[in-house]
Image 1 (cartoon, rainbow, N blue to C red):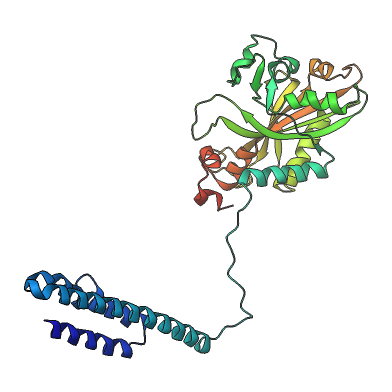
Image 2 (image 1 turned 180 degrees about the horizontal axis):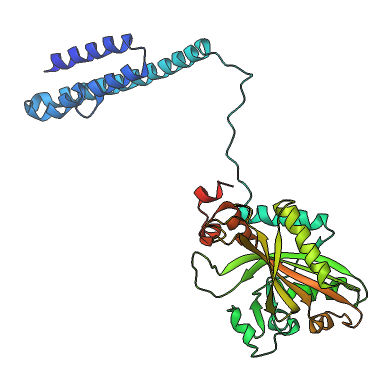
Length: 344
């Protein structure tokens, strides 16, 4: 049996010298050194030998296994060098070809719409004013003409904190008060601002409602500002946003902080007003709520309503994005699903 072991050893070395590829080297390793390899099987048969022959056979079998393992390692290094040299010599590299582009992130669809809003309103003379997400009940409701127990408060399910009077804002409208107080110079300067930001409402999450969403509030305060100024401004925004030929209509509505108030619809930019699934076959899409700033709100912002007047509006970027792209579920915006986000 020892002679058989030596024969396998010599055969393994001869075969190893002829191997020139990694695949063949792997097959050689399995044949001789693998779990069911020739040398491994002979080592396992040591126990079948007479007791006086086991020690010498086992010693030689382990020596041969170690020698073949070292030879395999050396051959593997040589073959790796040869294959690399062959690749460098035979492979042609066209250095004029562009490199492989690395995947990069993109802007969130809501962010894209927010930036577009800021660009359009910026061209119309409105500056961006940032206000806080965590507000007081006073600014979120009372100063906006929502007295305690006012039924309009029930329209907005509010997130309250453990600290009395501190809430997550339900709308960007409290920024109106802060903008008037900070930019109005004690009610002596006109202002034109938009107030983009996140709002929070304790609502059931469905395909059409979320607990968080963006709003873009707008505010203009000056002397002799009229409803016609508001209507003209909104109509101009719609033209710049959705096309020069878009039609706009106004419907009476109610908001505690504006009087009079209205909803603004634009002709559906997908079907051109002929009616489609997105506009529910009406030909119109709601784009904004708006109105003349209530005298109480002007007064709370530091302006004398007998001298100053203004208008305000609010728009939803997520809603506009959903309408534009035919998105049917608002939950996609915050689900962090790359299959959705990478489409934009």
